[in-house]
Image (cartoon, rainbow, N blue to C red; front, side, top):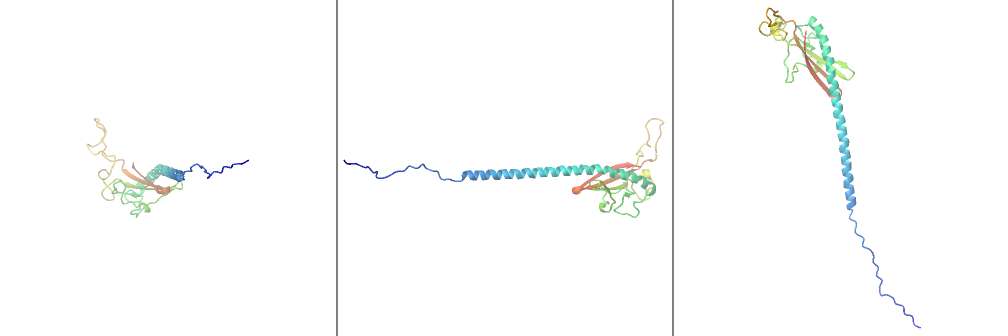
Length: 203
């Protein structure tokens, strides 16, 4: 009895095709990661900037409110100056560091007297953080002493018609009872905050 064994000439193995990896997914992931990082950095910077602006606004408002203290201090000092140094700069012998000028001073485009050197003007500290300075100048022109108040000073004297009421037989005011003064206040505080205000007061 013969047995026949069939041996194939060749063996063929079929293996599925595996695509070549190009790294596209990794590249996209890296781009997304960089974009998210940049967005996070931008958000942090935006928050920091907003906090800085808010802080600066708060300091500015606080400095502006503190100027009220300067005006009150100046008004109180003026009461003494009027009785002791009306026709002389104060303190005696001062030049650009005066707290009071007996004559009206020239101003810059902001209305601030150009003669003021704030580095030499006395200051008062408020709430340990704010430095308050003030300068008063009497709104009078001419030379010292001022003898013609109605003619040389801004005052409550009527400018024409003799003044007084227009009512028949009413009183006519012919002399000044109040002279006007300009108060310039400067407040400096944290983060180089500076606020300046002016007020016109009478005495």
